[in-house]
Amino acid sequence: MTRTQISLIQIDNYGPWTTTPEPRREVDLQTLQSRLYADVSQLVGNNEGYAFFSRFDNLVTVTNGLDRAALELVQESLRNRYPVTASITTGVSRSPADALGSASRLLQEAGSAQDSQRREILAGDPLPETERTDTDVQIAHFDVNDATGKYTDELNEFDSFINIERSYAELMRYMRTAHESLSFFVGGDNIIAVCSDMDAADYYNAIDHVRDTVDVELKVGVGRARTAQTAGMTAKHALEDCRHDGSTVELGW
Image (cartoon, rainbow, N blue to C red):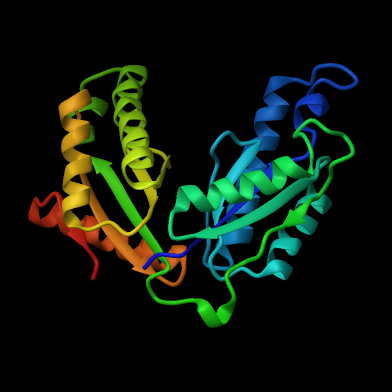
């Protein structure tokens, strides 16, 4: 049974900050956002978690194994490195979507994302160590079949990107509605999904849906473990089995 711990990291009062006292250069904002994401990824990753850039001012992280002190350290590190602060709220559920929903409600109840008085909220209860198991996190790593041959080596970069994004958008919607799972584009032709309890048939159905809807073929490797990184590495190895054997779905258990 999965019990996913999701922490939502939101830059405090970011919209007004970008235009005060006057609009800031877009290149500087993009640089700040990318560096902040890289630091969050490293800070969370040091504790076996995963971070996804989402909209950059709101980052979704899988934090099984991080307690309140570890999350507070993430806040402190961001405060020391950047001219902005961040709030972090946490939810835990069998459904990753429900966990994110709980984290989001905690933050919304504390105040608006553009409330200058709402700073560095830290709320929500991480999963107690005594309740953690080796099946808490299920990670699925999808990629596009022969993306290089079909797209990269045949189309211009933007048209290749459109095809990859079409598959991501359709998979993201399907996984959210059918399985309360959260899917994120992570570069290249790769999509990582944080999943509820899903079996092989569920993954075949997801891949069939994307193929039938947008005519893009996927394959997937899946792992599960106590932490996102361990589950993710198992998923990566399972995906390599797909590539080697020509299979569509491989479960790492």
